[in-house]
Length: 130
Image 1 (tube, rainbow, N blue to C red):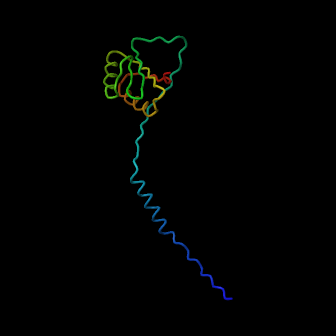
Image 2 (cartoon, one colour):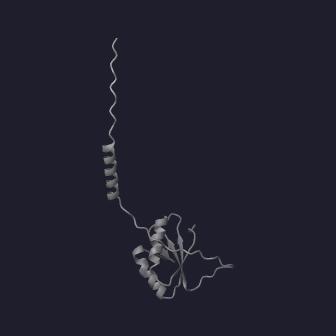
Image 3 (cartoon, rainbow, N blue to C red):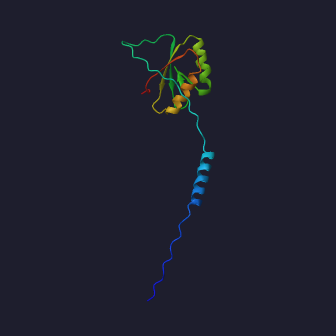
């Protein structure tokens, strides 16, 4: 009974595997999009004791999923900047911003970025509207 002699296995070359991984890495790096994130300075205001009174120079802005409400007026995002500049020119110095429950953070940041373009406007952000 003659046994066959085992042939030693050839070592697998990983050079081609490294080349493929490098090409995939290069492809995904070149085909991906890079988002540019912006920062918004947010300072926390201290709560004042007593009942809050609404002054004539303050307004309330409710951020909705689509559009915003300034008082009882519905405004689309494209007209918001012009409306806020007109409010600021009329003497409004404080804007209370209330996001609805369904509003995502990115939507809130987009509206706050728009509002930051109005000079001299103090923005107070409070929790979501019920």
